[in-house]
Image (cartoon, rainbow, N blue to C red; front, side):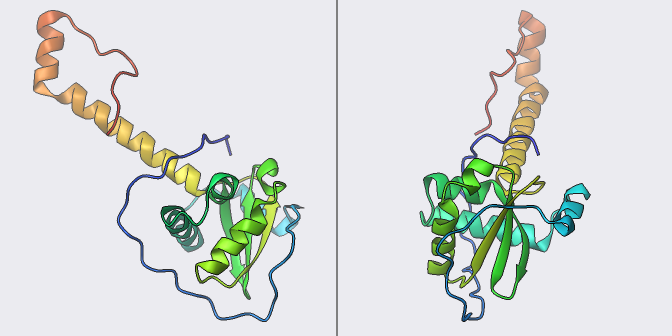
Length: 178
């Protein structure tokens, strides 16, 4: 996907508590090495972006971790810029298009934050094209809020009268969503 700017986390209603996964006998990994996308996951990259249950779950999980300040800085950015590809047998596969984030060591800290929040999982993180990350969703929501704010202003009868009666114009970029 296209590089996304760091996303801001909007205020939101509290999310339900994370449902802990069954305990696993696997020990947390000491270090996460980036891996290239496997042929199976490369096929998924070609599919159009359709929100999935995994994407919805990851979005809610990342926002809950961020709201609780369990993740910050690079760890938060890795979570925002990754998509959950697969949850299976106590292991989650994430994909991020940002190799620098994957190689930063933030994955180990993200795994620790997930474990502290009740998700006894082992993370694997691969570098590859992403289509539905929390950052993409937050950017799309911000763009929609902006579009709605501009629409409200341009359709407002008072604004229309001011534009018509005084020859005014709306300066592009001057309307900001709140």
